[in-house]
Length: 143
Image 1 (spheres, one colour):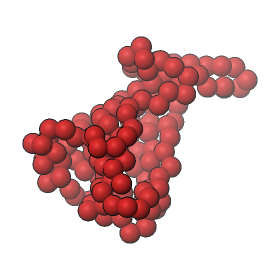
Image 2 (cartoon, helix red, strand yellow):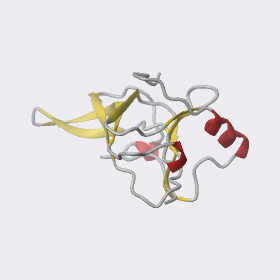
Image 3 (cartoon, rainbow, N blue to C red):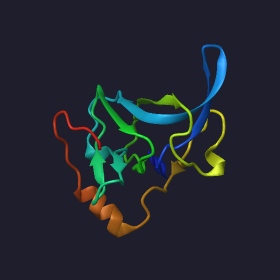
Image 4 (cartoon, rainbow, N blue to C red):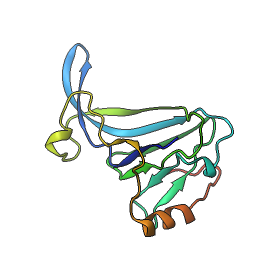
């Protein structure tokens, strides 16, 4: 209960081994695989896409995948139930620098963004817009 991920864009450079050589790569695509059965909007833990106006909420659906191009501003809303929310997430990498990142984000195996409890969307007006934007369409993709 209360776990969340603060707004962030996943932009980071990562050292990767390619054909035995260390290569500086950029995260190009993010991927999230949802593994929790019986999850709905009342459970919290939804992905919020801040690139669109108003922000769009994606409710975790069992055995579904969300993918988007990095950088893209997003967050995960606080979980509101006393049960685990299981996901597998990661990034597809591309050699080189695809975008500019803050100096703090230029680290090996960087994980960008905050994780914790009782944070997330602070502005009530924004939070209300996000919650009212809940929608789910079969086969819908972000961006």
